[in-house]
Image (cartoon, rainbow, N blue to C red; front, side, top):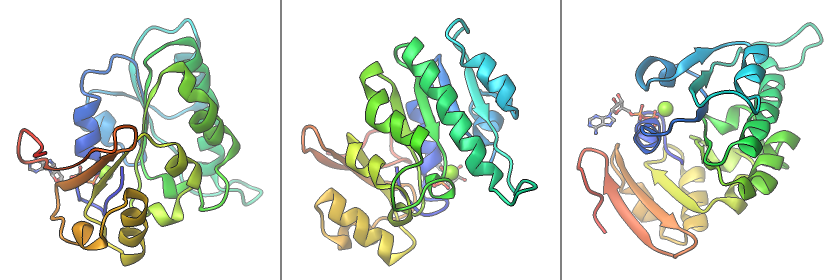
Amino acid sequence: VTGASRSGKTSWVAGRVAGARRLLVWDTVGEFAEKFHCYPIWSIAQLAKVCSPSSPAQRIAFQPMHGTDDEGRSIIKLQFDAFCRCAYIAMRAHRRLSLVVEELADVTSPGKAPAAWGAIVRRGLRYGPEIYALTQRPSESDKSIMGNASVFHCHAMARADDARYMAKEMRIDQAAIDELAPLQFLQRDRRTGVLRGGDLRKRRAKA
Ligand SMILES: Nc1ncnc2c1ncn2[C@@H]1O[C@H](COP(=O)(O)OP(=O)(O)O)[C@@H](O)[C@H]1O
Ligand SMILES: [Mg+2]
């Protein structure tokens, strides 16, 4: 799920997971906890508990910390690794986990995906989760998610590099992305090949 800031990414995903009973969100700005009926947690110890195989279905929003630790390592990246390990355990134990990751470019880079995230994207799909990976900067996020995504959902992009990148992935002209207004989107289903457009302000997306 790509798009500039305020282009509608979070709103679209929140609508998709509105009915999800077992939901886990990497909630970088706390929106899912605040607006979309998720229980906020901040500690990895708590996260490990709610992701254990015996835990009941819940809607959880994990809010990562920023900054660096005493050895200069990025805390958000360390926490993302732990978050992904917990998520993997939960998705293996429970079919139909919904997983949302806000701003992937904060925690991944264009090279190889961090190991635990890569494991979710490459091997975790067999357990039947529904995964939404969001980013403003697809050209700076990892390639594993692009290679394994079943749907590309693209809102208006701020930067030409990113618009060009998404146009190429979606096999469309960049002009089609450049013309998107906030809350409008284009979506390509890679399994069926179907391309459709829509607008979050309208109930039904037009074919
Ligand atoms: N259907 C809608 N009608 C009107 N405003 C909307 C609608 N959907 C989302 N918005 C507003 O658009 C803004 C940007 O949406 P958001 O999903 O937060 O974008 P992003 O996650 O890409 O930054 C928000 O203020 C949101 O409330
Ligand atoms: Mg958002």
